[in-house]
View (cartoon, rainbow, N blue to C red):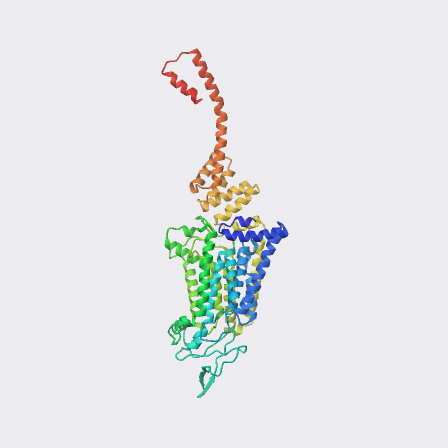
Length: 589
């Protein structure tokens, strides 16, 4: 249970969900840590299977790509902290509920609907079930609430193509299970084309996931325009298309679902805030130094760079650590910092992917990019410091849910690359298999680090020697083991890296044999944090011991002084001016 007590960023309701599952562990299997870890592994396997099912139903047209995505997700080293630590159970369980809520919402919409409106709600039960599962995900982990935004955006961009087809003169083929139209119904609008001087007529076809409307008059060919140009054209045609029906009338089914979901989310967030006592968690400067910077430019540049840093951890998880606080990532204080290049590159990639999605959403092509971006961006928003301060600089367990989007984008990019490079079609699977092997080896190595407190804390010192927090944690372990000399060294190292570490000063005072030096450590700790309970207790206890020692030396002196004063009163007569002085001396004794 050590990891549970060392995660200040976990809020009250997340603690409740983790403790409830831990209590079930204790009731069923006792305090054996093997079963705690086994439950996390089982949950991770369930998430992997549900992700594969989600990709098969809502992302890829080829089930093999869904399997490859799940395989990459299963062995990614960034998941080590979430699966091995008890607190990480909240992230794994929230991810499972996230996917189930998304599938339920997707099931509630009639995807085979043919008409002039957006698809209606086919099953209110699944819509309500998605609201319930999303609420459970939010109560387990704050990032779970983002599933509602993912569902709404996916609903709009994946199903609004139906209305665009009707505007462009196309007609969707009615599925076989639907009854034929009445004789008086309007005939379907044909799609005309010209080949070798002859007119051909046909009807557009719509399957469950792919539909490609014919090119409308005036529509530029995709091959002759760049991605930004096609994106601008798609937005312009969507907003200015000639249509007799009002957009509000056409999108009424979607707007009803959106109004229901948004209203429900507002109520749920209010309930969540009420659970937290009406206030956000309080954090210290060492938890998130950038958020305490008085300069707006520093905060903006640092937050932006942290986005690129997290993206790099997903792309190349080479350097992993259980704690990234206190000096792990220095603040970006200038626009001339070379790290800003990573931020610019990430922004450029995201903009190009977004424009690509907008340009292709009319034909529902490359839906993998849209879903990948939704799964990558939305779950990370609560951890981005965008709306409120978080209690960490970088947390690997927070990347558990966004890694789903990364895996989808990676597999889709690999498929497109294999399509473009026919000569390398055999080599790419081999390279991907090698990548899976490297990820698996890294995951096994990270699991060995999490086997014990000593291996975990010592690995932090080796990985991030400029991190004051890992030195402090390792010094605490050494102190508990009675290795005081080594503990003092790491406490002093932590203070060199972060002089405002009040807890390190307090613990260093407990190991110092010199009373004066220990008192100085306690007072310095209280100057940095006047509410530090342990420093207050230790200083009070030290002063009490000093006072008892002084009284033991003072009482014999007072007795001798009183005896001598009484003797002087008997043998000598004193003047009136001396009596008050002697009486005061007697009273002091």
